[in-house]
Length: 280
Image 1: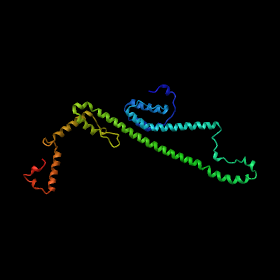
Image 2: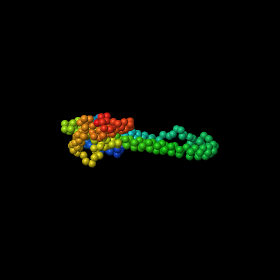
Image 3: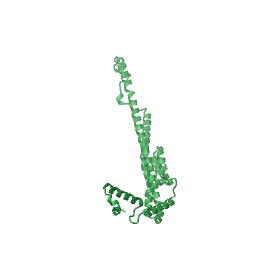
Image 4: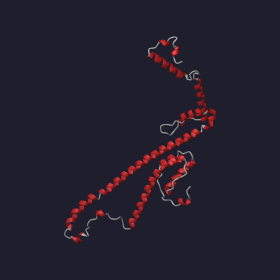
């Protein structure tokens, strides 16, 4: 836990909180875990303190959100540093002059060469000034716009990946809870039946957001287990005692054997007295 003295002196007073953060946190069912993530976000963004006591599911969400907070902190710190430089230059009378752009001023020229001033000034000044000055700010603005577009695209992609990974993590947590909910029925139905039941009903969809049983309009675990057990009994009763195969399996094997004999031109064994060559 963090002491109160640290929390009274924040390193910064603002950071960017995206909707994807809240969307990921809403997937948590435990209110304590939700509060722990919010505390971790604010402690790290304002105080620079990393969380150390998060649950496994909270650690997954934290690792996905942290890069965005780091990006927000870097932008904030850059703005603060630029503001300090601007205040320093203002107290000294303005931004330092550009050494590359130093030229002879009209005040110095008449003292050194009073006769040459009228000839040089009108020819050089109009040609250089309109061509060079407008290009620099235009190039800077284009570069800034490109950088903004790149940063926005990166944030959109990272937010989408955070949302997908958080949804998948929440589904895995529910799958684990579903598995533990079957423990009380182990003595009644046996481990093998429960394993088959779990493997079938916990199958997830393509987006990894829902399991098969979650898409059912109604669901009562005890009744579903009873129905599953009855269906297994019917399946076992349908098997042949001699072969251990169901009627459908025996019919399929019989048809396959007939087709093989017809393809080989062996029709004699299919007449009376040739039944012993068949599988059953």
